[in-house]
Each structure stands twice: as C-alpha cells, then as structure tokens.
Length: 328
Image 1 (cartoon, helix red, strand yellow):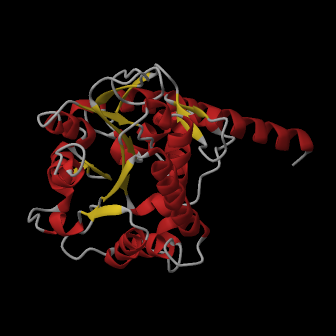
Image 2 (cartoon, rainbow, N blue to C red; image 1 turned 60 degrees about the vertical axis):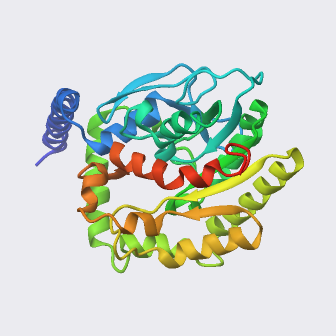
C-alpha cells in the first residue's frame, strides 16, 4: 500500500466521522427539543445563562436579562443576575432577606414560583411584609456564595441572610472550562457524558457516597475553605447587625438511612460551636414514606422537584421566621 492510498483512506475516515458528528448533532438538536436530557440541559445552562465572573473566588455569574427553557421550565434572570423578581437596592418597609445557595436554591427544574424561596417569601409575608432576594447559582459552593454576598448581596442592605446548605458545598471552587464554546454542541455533551459515565462505572473504589464523604475529611481543602467562608460570613453579618441562619437540606437518594449523617453532624456542630443558627432537615425528610425518586425533578436528576421544594419551605419556615420576622 503506497502513501497515496493511505492518505485517501484517512481522508475517507475523516469525512465519515464528520458526517457522523453532523448527523448526531442534528439528531440531538431535534431530540432535545421534545425530550429532556439532563447533561444537555446542564450544558445549556452553562453556555446560555452563565458568564465568567471577574472575581475568581466567584467563578461564574448569570448573564443579566438572560432567558432559557431548561428542564421543562422557563428560566429568566433579572437585571442583577438573579433568578428572581426585580428588587431595588433602596430599602422599603419590608423585612429583607438575602438567600444564598446553589442549584437547589436557584430552583433547577422547577418553576420560579414553586421554589422554596418564593414559597417562603409568600408565606412569611403573611406575618409582615417580606422581600427575599434569591442569589442562588448552580454549581456554587459556600466560598462562592459568600463572595457573591460581599459583591452584590450586601448592597441590598438585608436584615437577614439565610444560607441553604447542601452536601456538595464543600467542593473546591471549579475552574471555568476552556471548552465552553465547544460545549454548545450537543453532540460533544452527549459523547462526553457517555465517556464520563463509563469511566465512573469502571473506576475502582469510588462510590457516590464515598466521594461526598471524602470531601469532609479534616484536611480536605474544600472543607477547610467552606469553614473559613462560614466564619467570614458570620463576621460580615455581625459587623452590619444582620441575622444569619443556615438551613441544611439532605441529599435525596436515600432518606430513611441517610448516608451523610456524620458529615451533616460535623457541619452542624461547627456552626453551633461558632454561634451560627442552623437547622438540619434530614430528620424531617426521613419521615417521607414514598420512594425518594418521587421527590426528584427527573429519574436521572435528584434535584428537588416542586413537592420537595414545598417540604423544604414547610420544614424551615418556623426557623426562618424566628426573630425579626415574627418578633418571637
């Protein structure tokens, strides 16, 4: 076989591969318009709604005014980069609460009015006028949340800050991918998700539970940074006379025999030792008798659905109402 035949063979292979990728991209573009595919939806969230933040300790923020239809619901970002109504920096007579959190607080997969933040705002508003400003961003950890509060949240001059904590908040701050433009191709997202899934299934020793448990070893940088961020947050609030509360939301795969009880106890004890008011909702969710999947937004996505958001609001409402909301 001479060199020309080899080159012709390689050229034919490249053309075939390009045709395959184009057909796959077209097929996925059509399919994901009528069906929900989690990895594609997350990729679209990153490329359509997010932008790089100037502060590396924040990493990414939402694009002001951006809109998308993700996981079957409409998502609209306000002029300050939050999935919430427009709020003026100028105070009204309402009790003002800034809410910190990740994709759960953002309301991934549920309508904005069905998020626990929106439910709490409506129901606490029956006690007295309340404004709850939802700063939740997907893929945020505690460090990012506190830095966002410092840069944007404090400008709203809140009476209270409520952190909705989740098991992955001890992860290190992610580095923004250089492949974001390529990630806009749904074929790339699909193929990468298949490869990643195969690698995860064949990786020795690492399980879903052990991955998150390992985050809370005392020497883990994400856990150390998380504790430092909570102390920084406490200092920011004390300096300004702002009440601080933390609501701990359990992971929804196993509610009756919760695998992260030790990790949540570790965080709860740390908060209590530093006089940060906290409530752990794990025991409340343990009373749920149906399959945990009935609380997920999709069978391949354990983010809380609308009924789960309602439960979070119900279980945390009295705790959040303490102090200046209810005057108890």
